[in-house]
Image (cartoon, rainbow, N blue to C red; front, side, top):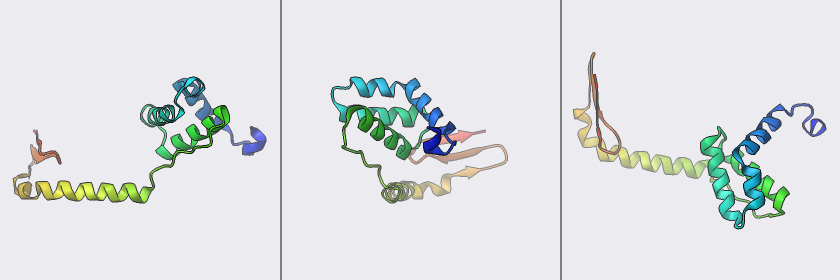
Length: 124
């Protein structure tokens, strides 16, 4: 590995240890339905280990290719698509609470406001 990474292989070793700890290798080797397994393993790596979606997807795709010979790669949702969806959601929530903006209060000893879901929050 040191030849391949030019002696910068500590991160790769840590990543492989995380995968072993998470049981990803065993799950891939024993899975009957590789597509379902792939989605589950990506989700586990994102939620239980501090891996970005792209990293988790790339790692799982690579392991499945190496261990099972499966060349069907899962695509990561593009950042632009995700950002556009987030902006649309934010606009929708802001429009929903706009009429209540006057009722949001901040003082020296209290804060009262609304969550995007409409729940009242009071602190103080």
